[in-house]
Length: 373
Image (cartoon, rainbow, N blue to C red; front, side, top):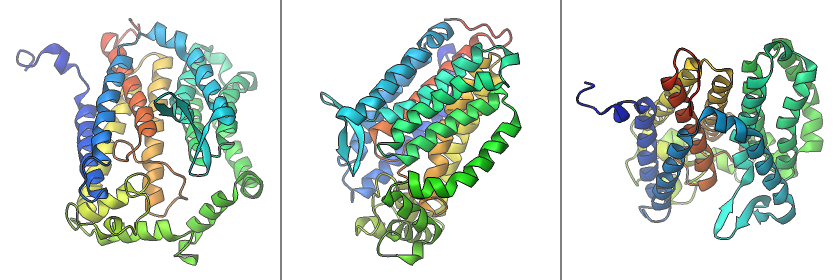
């Protein structure tokens, strides 16, 4: 087989690339249907963005260990400054101030903060002496790396992104070797402070989202409309769906945001349980590959970096699926590689690029742990 397939081709992570391309192609079909058969509306830009970001991921994958370590903190600081800049000169959209206009480019810096926090924490704990990891003194800088961007993102306000930043950061902290009792105590404290956070920390519309999640049927034509219609769309798809471009919920405008946050409901109505199983299976292969990359890493920095990036992708997938099925509040988290949106695709492709980079490091030094440029 090695004589038939060129070595550079054989070395590519096909276990991840095949399901990734499958999700992108399937997403283009779903987005075409969400636009009532209009390919140019959403699907065309979806494919163009992917073509650009897959090149970006390949470029990232060529970075060496020393270069990445050198850039970790400057990249984090630069993105944190962009997040702060949003509060000063950011553009308002949908009632929130989350975007920066840089000429023809419109970016959401808080999206970039998710992989940046993972990178900074991986570098911090990767260079920290093992004996210092389970100490309060070492925890303080790590906590600042997570809490600083979270505070500014919550001001935008963007609860979903702040939770994603926290999740990726906490995964790195846990795998770095912090005592389990710290996480248990943090969980107890979070539960105790939840009422205060609800009444003081959340905006009115965010409180309504939580209450709607707890009882969506209480206001089916108001705040509960989105999730009620999403459940109807998913349930009406049955085993094999209504067929491509035949979804009544999205085509008759019953389903809000059928091409972004609720794209899974659009897909499930037309492709049914089989389509949902295909989508979840493809994501499962990508996440399983990410965990394999982390497990294969003998360098602590690489292991934490790969695990954190995999956790970031997992958060997107898990929260979006739970959200559209009514098991989590609506927090505006798109479905990776299927939803229409440039910022979320860029973030997830950065994660893919970093995983490809660590995969390359593992191939070059599988036993010694020596990372070559």
